Length: 391
Image (tube, rainbow, N blue to C red):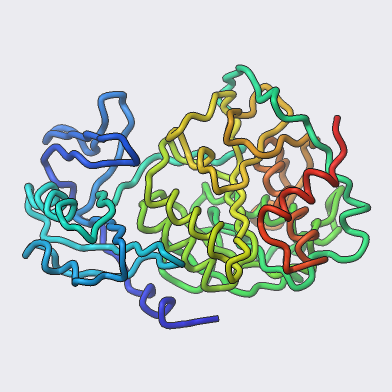
């Protein structure tokens, strides 16, 4: 594993007070306006989506920071490489935290020919994919519901030689059923430390996902599906865009073949979409890293920028349920009954919905990839679709 990037990312990115001025920036082909005033602790859009903002800007350049971005504006204090893979070069700029600087620097950057786009670093609400708000609706009837054939998939291996990254909240690797897990790398984005253990009472989801993949049989109806694979455990407890990009970049540096993301936020931002697309195109030495996103369980249609489940380059997994989100970006719809999995503090808890479905797809991809690591992402997804039975 290469280490210079990892060492650079041990530096803490400080969160500064909010900046009291309206902001306008581009997100894909749309112009986003967020506003605040002294009475609001957050920023929001006209449709009510809420954000926190810091004096940091994320920039994509057409080349590798040449000429230097420092020349764009004197308020730029520091520039760090944020995510680089293939032709995707993303940087994090820290600027003076004066009220008008953020918009002024955004405008200056967007005027430069080497800049593809620039966005403020944003924190938005995130929802674990297992969460359901009782909303029901349509479903993606264009896709058949699949049932994975585990005896056939596991016939020759249990994921040996494959590295799976779980980007989620904390993972309790002290759980008796997870102690045998082969951990290739662990990191806490929030704490900036080499440990992905739960830190908050809300850190319950990642441990359940890990159990589906890696748990020993003790106390469970079903053992982990790929216990011989290696785990890259990344605790990412928030949605700062820069932190999400760091999580993806560390997964890439640690050699992830598959990245599991059983969560979504309330809006898709271009930096995240660009990073996932780069992983799918350039990861695994050009064969493509599989980034698996859960569709979510709000019973809603996934629109172009509604969440990370809208990313075309991701493998998006829905569930054969009226609670599953649906739409043209969904690649697979699974039928799978809820099951018990590992829980924090040594216990067990249920997991179901698209969190379970996406975890199972992650496992199936790992089993197929272990058979033939030379498969590219298109062939891998096709093999999974062809090998599953239709309900």
